[in-house]
Length: 537
Image (cartoon, rainbow, N blue to C red; front, side, top):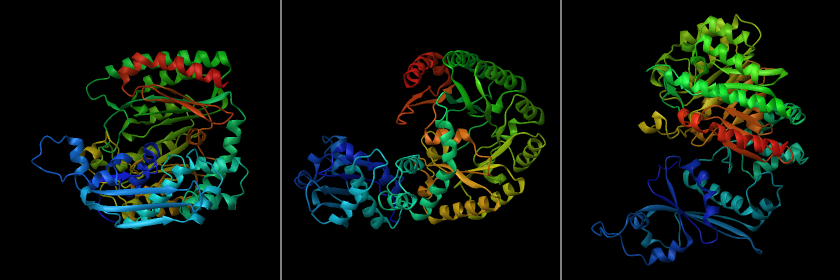
């Protein structure tokens, strides 16, 4: 792989700016730390060739002009497929002065008529136009040649690749043909296609059940407070180190949103089949606060008899035997205890206020209480951890025998301390070796992959995977990831997804992440949510 580029431009005379924008995320799969600027067609080669040389003393030239004339690498993509013969060409020009550009790129690829015809003839499962798909094919092949890196998910840059395979299944396309489409049209690597097929096969019965009951929704409640802030975290989470007054004010507003939402659900015959309390860290609440909140939820939100009731209890330092018992007494039947790593030096490095011993002890206490399934989380790519550390963490978690194992790949996002400190994403083969260890460990534990999703800026261009013992899958995770069940999100930062069961189109409504702004605006969001849900029903 070549080094990261300080200045990269994307240009075309045949693709529009909006089409070029579709290629930016794909370019970031090859150059995750590089900012890419689109050059308008009018700014292209002819104007560059006639541009005057940049002058450091010319302080009259504005910043935009200085950017245009600076040394940069340029990607040019052109297409012709209005009539035969079709062609797509992509060229890479490495760090030249724009005024010195000529017609030859450092690297160049060309898709021929036959290749393009095969792409255009494939069944369409995604929403992108043929032009955007051809643009991405050109970029993918060019940058694979330039960098020597082949992203395992091909031209896909979205969060939910499994949605594409579900759509192909909905169209009645056979497994072998669906595999061909994923490999040739989307350029997904064969092992990732097989992984996707396993996930989708497990999900189909869950989705059929969800789709058979459109009156049932999932409900999410967010508690945006944490004991400490992890260095990789970009979620809204507020510390209570200066007192619990913010939490008390927040809970007062949350109680009211729960009451009003529950009343509307009862009026319309709507109920929840999957409830999830996340954060932040919900178990930062005291036993009495947690008990009162869960009782209020059960009193106001109509629930199905076979309710899946999940609580994120990620921080062992917020748990005790009495608190665990209180959760179970209120009907919680799924629990997440999330170490992220089983190495004390890494826990300290990422800002966690607990030890590996705390994790083991709390897990043992939780296991003494029957009737719930327990998930544990790991993160691949944490600072200072190699394949060896991951294998040790997997071994220790395997000895605990959780019902679920969710493995995330580090994604460094704006707003996190790691991003501010300049931590660079890991794109080398070590990340893939880590994930191979995960797959082997999950299989040894008798678990299968049942949901996956991707994130922007994810290390190694990989994916997050949820594993489960047979029968221990989390329906909430499947429903929200495949976007086939409406979700009512309550609390600061919570997202509501209103699904149209006719075509699975959706409306996304987001509560403000700031808890104080949430208290001012939640009624407005609630009214919009009620209106959208009423229309779709």
